[in-house]
Length: 158
Image (tube, rainbow, N blue to C red; front, side, top):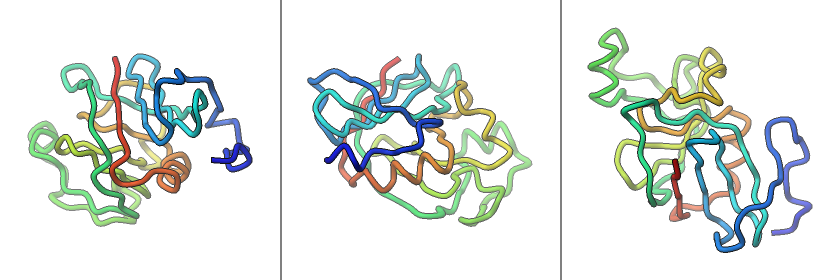
């Protein structure tokens, strides 16, 4: 990838160094740093701020991108619905109340995704707030969506 294709807006995204042992095309999520790194070249990554899973919902290890969705619909997983029975059973894609935001990258390890967020939940970025998903600003998940392929490796570290 040419470095000229890297984002020019450094407010939300920064170009950073990363271990040269991580292959280009890999997503690395650091729960401790509350950052997602997309490796664009050997030793070079784009860094995005994210919300990570809250206490008791953390996970680590390796998975991959299973699917890519524009304005995804949302059905609350059973664990979310149990804690928040007031939630509707279905929120259509494109709704301002849809917690998936404008894009979603589903992961192969179950009901987990890297996704956007609602306007109301933007303040959660940089915190541990989710039920297992990785929450991004809509503008950042849109940028990542354009760069990532189905099958891309994903690594979550604590």
